[in-house]
Image (tube, rainbow, N blue to C red):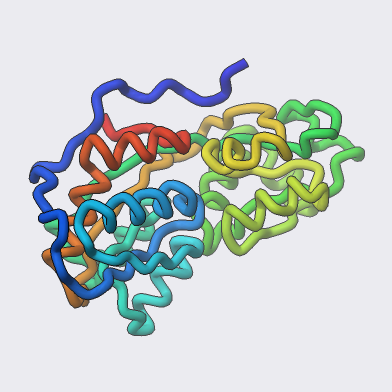
Length: 252
């Protein structure tokens, strides 16, 4: 069974064409991106640098931790969040340039278990045999908030709460499950795809807010023009193809 929805064939393109000169000289850009974007943004950064000559310094963490870093004055040129709420808080704190904000990708939320364990369905999580369930901390990890919404919708959050092992970001949740330190976990579909040989997808979860990734140039960007070029590249046909390669869907 295919647990990953087909992405729209037409990519959402930036309003501006990708026009960066092939050998532009500029200071390095710092891009802070949600942990679930690690593989995709590593490739995007490499391809952007090859095309533009602009170096990219990548910083990955949970979206909320990245926001806190910016609030503390960390130098960031581009911010990519795994949820709209965190980007809304960044906008409310005047940490981003609101006119630059765009939605760049969508994701799914899935229930996973260690690859060698017995298959599970969502209702099995309440059984005595399932003792540890890894989820992101809802207060600081978007995947954790989505998980709480989905499990609450299914009427399971309160029942399962004593079994939760909280992760500080979605990749820590994935690591708990792939190492067998949790009987099950809730991560993004792209995370499960990145560890397909170690974890098994049991179900796509519903009843949560859409998993939508916004991106924006920060208000304090030292190189706003170059930062805008990177954002445009992410939204271009080439950039969207990279995101699709790692399981993300484009924005309709």
